[in-house]
Length: 248
Image (cartoon, rainbow, N blue to C red):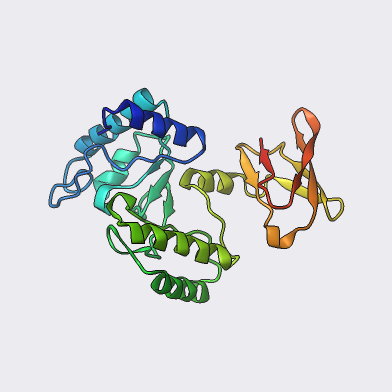
C-alpha cells in the first residue's frame, strides 16, 4: 500500500515527471507462500489487489502503471487471468509464458541474494559470459533492492553500471519505454544527409522516444530536422556529449 507521507509522495511525483518509471509491485507486497498476494489465491482476490494498487497510484500520485512485477516473483496461472482486467499493464517482469504481455526476462543477477549486491568483478564475469553466449540478446533486466543496501553496495552498483556502459553493447531504458520502442520499431525513418545532418521522419510513430549519441562516436555537433504531421521542424544543434532530442 502507499505510504501516507506527503514528502515521499512528492518525490514519487517528481520521479515520474522526470520519466523514471514507477511500476506496480503489489498492493500488500505479501510473497509468503502458500498464499501470496499473486500466488495460491483466487483470480478475484488477485484482481482486487491489482485494482487497489492501480487506483491508489492514479489517485494519490496521478500516474498510470504500465508494468507489473509480483512480490518475490510469486505468481501462478490466476495472475495471468487477473491481469487481463487491466489493459494499461503491458509489461510483466519475470512473467508467465501464457500471456500476451511483453515479458522481461531474468537471466542476469546484480544481487548475489535479494538485497545484497554482487561484487563488480563477479557481475562483470557473468555479464561477459552472457554476451558471449547470447550475442543477439535484445533486452535484459537487473533486479535490485537499494533500501536494503549498505554504503559499500551503493559503490558496487555504481561500478557495475560503469562496467555495463563501458562494453558499448547496451543502453538503459525503462520497461514501458522498451515496450513503446518495440511498437514503433521500423516506423521511425532516419535519413543521413551528411556526417552531422540527419532528418528524422516521425509521421508513423505512436510514442515519444529519445535519440542518444555516444560521445565516443561523435565529434563536434549534430543537426536534426524533425518531420511530423505538421511538416519539417528544424531541430537545434547539440554538442556531442549531450542527449540531444526528444522525438514526438
